[in-house]
Amino acid sequence: MATNQDIIAGVVQKVIEELMGPKSTLPEGFKGIYDRVEDAVENAAEAQRQLIALPLKTRDKMIAEMRKAVLDNNEMLSDLAIRETKLGRYEDKIRENILCATKTPGTEDIQPLAITGDDGLMLREYAPVGVIGALTPITNPTGTFIHNGISMVAAGNAVVFNPHPTARETSTKMVEILHQAVVDGGGPPGLICSIRTPTLDTARQIIEHPKVNMLVATGGKPVVRVVLSSGKKAIGAGAGNPPALVDETAHIRNAAECIINGASINNNVFCTCEKEVIVVDEVADSLIKFMQETGRAYLLSAQEAQRVTDLVVNEEGKINIGFIGRDVQVILKEVGIDLNEDYRLAIFEAPKDHPLVWLEQMMPIMPIVRVKDVHEGIRFGVEVEQGNRHTAIMHSTNVDNMTAFARAVQTTIFVKNGPAYAGIGLGGEGHTAFTIAGPTGEGMTSARSFTRQRRCTLVEGFRII
Ligand code: NAD
View (cartoon, rainbow, N blue to C red):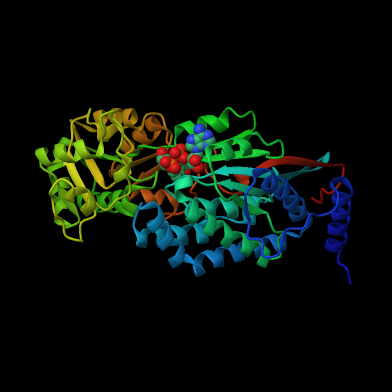
C-alpha cells in the first residue's frame, strides 16, 4: 500500500516532469565524469530535481554508502593522492579520509526550526540551493571531495566539481567512487560529477553557467576573489597562516609535542597546520629543547636555516612549490643534511621579518620567533595571521591570556593546548570540514552552509500548548 510519503513524492515528481520535461538518459556504465561543462550542469540540475522528490531516508542511505565507499577504498585513494600530487604522507591521508568520512555531518545538520504562538506555527527549513559548482585545491583531492560531497548532497543539492588540474587523476577516481555510492544508495546518477579535463576555462564556464546556483571555492586568495565577484551566492574558503603562540604559563613539554604533531601532519599541507611558532622568551629555550628531545624535530643552525630558506623561497620571495608537502628528509637532503626516518619537522629560530614567518610554507620547516612577553606575542600573532580569519593556536594555562589572544586574532578556529588539527575534529570535539570558510564567515562548513532558508507559516493552527 502506498504511504503518504510515496503519494507526495509521486505528485512532486509529476509536477517536476511537467515543468522540466522527461528525464534524460545517461549512458550505460556512466561514472559521473563529463567532457563538457554544459552536459555536467544540465544533468546535475535534473539529478537534483530527482533528489528532492526522493524521501530523506533515501538521502541518508546515499550518505551511508558514500561514507562506506570512502572507508573501503581508503588505501587506494591515499596512495593515489600521494603518488599523483607528491604532497603529504600516506598515513596522514588515511587519517584525513577517515575523518571526513566519519565526522562530516549528514541530514541531521539541516533540522528545521519551529516557532509556535498565538498566531499559529512558523517553520523555518534549510532548503537546497540547487546545483553547486565546487572548485577544489591540489592539497586535498580526497578530503575536500568527501566533505563537500556528503555535505552538499545531505542538503539536497547536486555538485559539479572542477578539480585542480594537477590532482586530476585522484579527483576523478574520488568522484567516481562517490557517484557510484550515491547510485547504490538509490540516488540519481549525475548528482555528484566532475569535469574530465579541468582547466581555468572549465572553471569559468561553471562559474558563469546560469543553472549553477552557488559557488564554493576552496583554495588560495585569488580563486576566492573570483567566486566572490561572480554575482552568485558563494562560499570562499581561503589560505591561512596559523600562528601557534606559547606563553610562559604553558605546559611546555605538551606544547612541544602538540606543535610537532600539528605542524608535521601531512607535511604541513593542511591549511590549518601551525605555520609559525611565537614563544615568550622566558620559555623559548625549554620549548626548543623539549622539541629536540622528541627525536622528531631537527634544530637547524643559523647557517643551515639560511641554506634551507634560499632553497624553499624563490627570488621573487614566493614559496618554491617544488618543496610543498615534501618529507623533511627530502628537503634537507638538498642542502646536505641527512636525517633519519623518525624526523618529521625542521625548526629554526627566526627574526620577525623572516619570509617563512609570513608565507604559507605548507612544508615541514617551522620558524620560531621569540617575543619579550605575551602581549607582544598576541600583537605579533595577529599581524602574521594577516586577517585571513583562519586558524590560531595557543598554549597557555592563563585563561585571561587565551581569551585576549582569541579576541584579538578573530580566527575561525582557535585551538587551546592541542595540535591545530584538533580544531578540525581530529582528536578534538565537533564535526570536521575541509572547506573552512573564513572570508565569507560560514566557518567549519557543513550541510547547512549549502542551503537557503525557507519559511512556512500556518496561521492560527498547530499550537498545542
Ligand atoms: P589554488 O587557489 O591555486 O587552486 C584552488 C582551485 O581553484 C583549483 O581547482 C584551481 O584550479 C582553481 N583556480 C585557481 N585560480 C583560479 C581562477 N582564477 N579562476 C578559476 N579557478 C581558479 O589553491 P591550491 O594551491 O590548489 O591549494 C592550496 C591553497 O588552498 C592554500 O592556500 C590553502 O591554505 C588553501 N586551502 C584552504 C582550505 C580552507 O578550507 N580554507 C582548505 C584547503 C586548502
